[in-house]
Length: 93
Image (cartoon, rainbow, N blue to C red; front, side, top):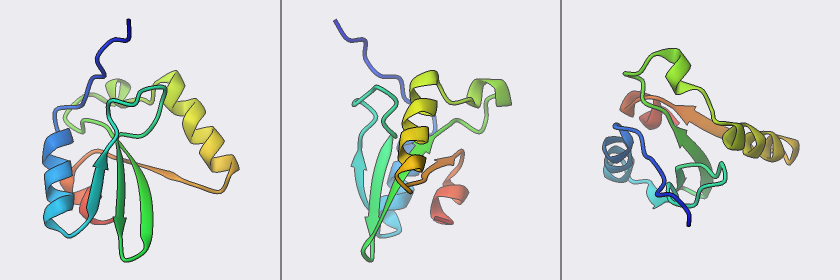
């Protein structure tokens, strides 16, 4: 049985802020296996977003092994997964 995916405390706030800023947001937090938390699109641009809780200590904000592997695979394909910790960072994408 698969465990329920955990989301960071700021996940809903960031998702809502992106939508309010005109981004189309697909919440992928439940996918697992290191897949990013959000896929966002605006003006023909698609961005993969990994959310980390900026209120936590840096060691608690680290990517999991699955996330690291997914990011590496995407980087090898020329795709960057943006890691953000706040609404401000999200809105600067």
